[in-house]
Image (tube, rainbow, N blue to C red):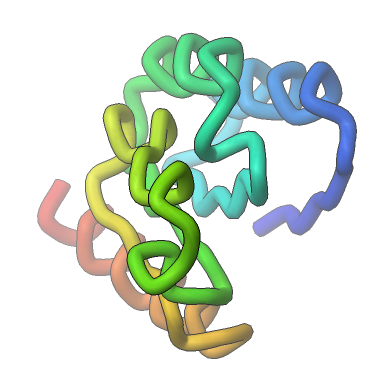
Length: 101
Protein backbone atom coordinates (compact mmCIF):
# COMPACT_ATOMS: atom_id res chain seq x y z
CA UNK A 1 0.00 0.00 0.00
CA UNK A 2 1.29 3.45 -0.89
CA UNK A 3 -0.21 6.84 0.06
CA UNK A 4 0.58 9.96 -1.94
CA UNK A 5 -0.73 13.52 -2.20
CA UNK A 6 -0.04 16.29 -4.69
CA UNK A 7 -1.77 19.38 -5.95
CA UNK A 8 0.11 19.11 -9.26
CA UNK A 9 -1.85 17.50 -12.10
CA UNK A 10 1.27 16.32 -13.90
CA UNK A 11 2.59 14.63 -10.79
CA UNK A 12 -0.75 12.84 -10.33
CA UNK A 13 -0.69 11.64 -13.94
CA UNK A 14 2.86 10.34 -13.47
CA UNK A 15 1.91 8.45 -10.31
CA UNK A 16 -1.12 6.91 -12.01
CA UNK A 17 1.07 5.76 -14.89
CA UNK A 18 3.58 4.29 -12.40
CA UNK A 19 0.79 2.17 -10.88
CA UNK A 20 0.58 0.04 -14.04
CA UNK A 21 2.22 -3.30 -13.33
CA UNK A 22 3.16 -2.19 -9.81
CA UNK A 23 -0.13 -2.15 -7.89
CA UNK A 24 -3.24 -4.32 -7.86
CA UNK A 25 -5.68 -1.43 -7.45
CA UNK A 26 -5.96 2.34 -7.12
CA UNK A 27 -7.96 4.64 -4.84
CA UNK A 28 -8.04 8.21 -6.12
CA UNK A 29 -9.33 11.51 -4.80
CA UNK A 30 -8.43 13.85 -7.64
CA UNK A 31 -10.01 16.89 -5.98
CA UNK A 32 -10.98 19.59 -8.47
CA UNK A 33 -9.09 17.71 -11.22
CA UNK A 34 -11.96 15.20 -11.09
CA UNK A 35 -14.08 17.68 -13.02
CA UNK A 36 -11.46 19.05 -15.39
CA UNK A 37 -8.63 16.64 -16.15
CA UNK A 38 -8.76 14.64 -19.33
CA UNK A 39 -5.07 13.86 -18.72
CA UNK A 40 -5.96 12.03 -15.51
CA UNK A 41 -8.77 10.19 -17.29
CA UNK A 42 -6.39 9.10 -20.05
CA UNK A 43 -3.86 7.87 -17.48
CA UNK A 44 -6.56 5.94 -15.61
CA UNK A 45 -7.78 4.33 -18.83
CA UNK A 46 -4.25 3.02 -19.33
CA UNK A 47 -4.53 0.95 -16.16
CA UNK A 48 -5.87 -2.58 -16.08
CA UNK A 49 -6.60 -2.58 -12.36
CA UNK A 50 -9.68 -1.72 -10.29
CA UNK A 51 -10.07 1.98 -9.51
CA UNK A 52 -12.19 3.48 -6.71
CA UNK A 53 -12.92 7.21 -6.79
CA UNK A 54 -13.25 9.02 -3.44
CA UNK A 55 -14.56 12.46 -2.49
CA UNK A 56 -14.77 13.76 1.06
CA UNK A 57 -17.88 15.81 0.28
CA UNK A 58 -20.99 14.74 -1.58
CA UNK A 59 -20.19 16.23 -4.99
CA UNK A 60 -23.87 15.96 -5.98
CA UNK A 61 -24.86 18.44 -3.24
CA UNK A 62 -22.38 20.98 -4.53
CA UNK A 63 -22.18 23.23 -7.61
CA UNK A 64 -23.58 21.72 -10.83
CA UNK A 65 -20.16 21.64 -12.54
CA UNK A 66 -18.98 19.21 -9.83
CA UNK A 67 -21.66 16.69 -10.85
CA UNK A 68 -19.51 15.70 -13.83
CA UNK A 69 -16.52 13.45 -13.10
CA UNK A 70 -13.95 12.42 -15.67
CA UNK A 71 -12.49 10.01 -13.10
CA UNK A 72 -15.84 8.17 -12.89
CA UNK A 73 -15.53 7.22 -16.54
CA UNK A 74 -12.60 4.96 -15.57
CA UNK A 75 -13.54 4.04 -11.99
CA UNK A 76 -15.26 0.85 -10.91
CA UNK A 77 -17.08 2.77 -8.19
CA UNK A 78 -17.42 6.11 -6.41
CA UNK A 79 -17.60 6.87 -2.69
CA UNK A 80 -18.53 10.42 -1.74
CA UNK A 81 -19.90 12.39 1.16
CA UNK A 82 -18.50 10.41 4.11
CA UNK A 83 -15.54 12.62 4.89
CA UNK A 84 -12.27 10.88 5.67
CA UNK A 85 -14.20 7.67 6.44
CA UNK A 86 -14.57 7.38 2.66
CA UNK A 87 -10.96 6.19 2.42
CA UNK A 88 -11.65 3.22 4.71
CA UNK A 89 -14.78 2.43 2.70
CA UNK A 90 -12.71 2.62 -0.48
CA UNK A 91 -10.13 0.20 0.90
CA UNK A 92 -12.92 -2.25 1.77
CA UNK A 93 -14.48 -1.86 -1.69
CA UNK A 94 -11.16 -2.29 -3.46
CA UNK A 95 -10.41 -5.38 -1.39
CA UNK A 96 -13.73 -6.92 -2.45
CA UNK A 97 -13.08 -6.06 -6.11
CA UNK A 98 -9.67 -7.74 -5.90
CA UNK A 99 -11.13 -10.83 -4.17
CA UNK A 100 -13.70 -11.15 -6.97
CA UNK A 101 -10.76 -10.95 -9.38
